[in-house]
Length: 503
Image (tube, rainbow, N blue to C red; front, side, top):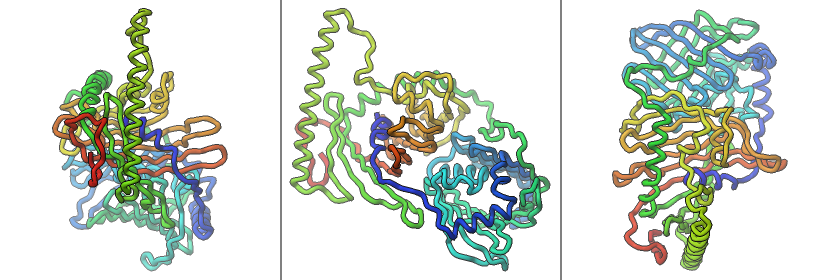
């Protein structure tokens, strides 16, 4: 139900077009030529780098390897005197593993940044226009005595890179790459030609307070790389659950979740964000609504606009609208009861119907391949995580099934309650028709919180969507926050909103 609401709300935004400043375009054009030419760069389908790594603080050394492949797949690994660290993005979700903290699926800004880095390692800036990224000239700086042109590279989802190009040679000599709350700085030198591509064989990497030196022994382009390189490492002998059986449990719990939810009121705050001139997402407007349930149907009323309570007259109008919603619900229930009586008389009772049928995440994933089940810790809970991707053989029967049959992502399930506590989804191909089409790369995530130790309810959702409408387009970057969950002890039919915005 929450997912359907998010998708329905994703058709409101303003027209937006990505523009490359001419000065940044010139820097990028010079870089393409210096590296071997744009045509040669676009012909790269995969990259494999093998070498050695040394940590400067204590001299620890070990092996290093990284892999990138078309479609935004990336994996990197190193060890330092036996301590292992690796990370990857497999096209559905990102992961990190180290010898201290084990394996974990990344979320939030870290997941966004890892996906962005994977795409960058696969295609550099060559798909920036197609992916609606923003490239702007950010001035000049001196890097180890060399003058460098600085280009700010901000993805459509807000990941921010800074690229430094030698003003004389045009070569990329530094990258500043985001990783959640941390920045990684890569300095490149010792460029050599590999298959006509100027390739750095010496890398200095700074992450937080640590600095590493990487010396590459071999770099290969356009080689076959096994897909398993990018998937989650198998590191435990603990039995993994059967995902299909797990979905049955999730579906079974969904009825109880809906029943409990009907006893709650809660607020939903929708924040519309737009990129400013620097590509940073800023809040443009917000609406806060109070949601309650009446006889199994949801009632919503506006209580705040842009952080300010409604005026008495505006609130009175919302209360009248809520009363009208109750009347409509009564009419729906009466019509349903009449229909059921007719079905009983005709012997059609008990036959399946799609009218008002709730579709759970478990139902929606029927058309997906379910992959990489694993056990992890998330927000202090034991969880089961699995990836999903489109199953070309599936024939969807509903709009929700069709949507998820085109998506890839990951699902987090609480091991104790068998309820979904997080969902990430990315649209893998454009969907729609001639009039309205959602573009590939659209994404949304939903994260739940445990309320009163009995039910996982929505806490926040992020929606990033680009829609083509006829010959124009809209970009939607909404943040939706849920909260103030309160149990109801009375019939919401007669409830009004108080001065504090609560029932």
